[in-house]
Image (cartoon, rainbow, N blue to C red):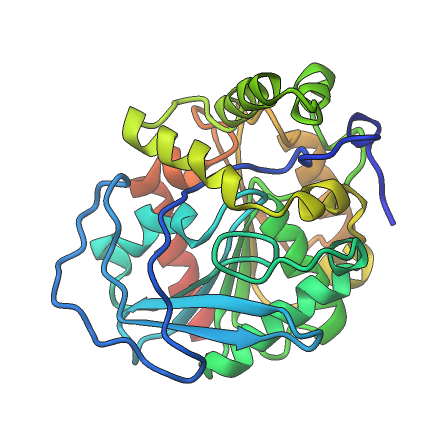
Length: 324
């Protein structure tokens, strides 16, 4: 189990990630399919792309997970894993992308987030295997065959734990975006004042800290509506989760280190939460096969700050991965 000094004693949050939204669409009961919508998705991040299917999946420990699908139901599958305090809406710029509509786009809300279940026991979040089992359950229930996994920040750690538990035999490849490799001081940027105030019992202090923390996610801040939505999204997160997740176990050597399938790391050079260069160097030490890209002008969320470039890079990676 790994700890970072900046997180000691914190209630809300890990230096990995806060992003995305609070509006919650109603979900179909388990096994039910929502009627397809004819609404055309727009590329603006502030809009909500049309979903073709919404359903729930139950993890091995009983936690229910909210799953959403869009794009081409017969296309190569891509499973997106958001970061801390986010939800599937973190990926609106990908789900709405015309360039990515040929793929089957699968998103889900992590445990403790969005519309997914929120257990209260700390071990439901500190045990990295449970997050891995969630991802495996989503893949199995969706029937996604050889998907490309895309994990942002904490979501990258979830992908690592999946790879440690299940190997890479059932995936085509993986993309880490602003990925948390390990919760080590050399890889996570310290913001002790922000983290202290996030743990404050004074509501005003805590809310101000959330705004400051979210601002650290971007070198180029999104327009006001999107930023406000992302800020509101933090209210959906479980307080038990934000207190426990800094102690989440990450099996980096067994997971990331053993991948043989294509692996791409994308970082923003101006990331204020995850140290891009040390993180990439550590990842390459674990696995020499991976390829890395640095977006010079981006912060912690390159997929949202430079969506056209990221979507192009992602599409190229997917095509390469599925040809192998």
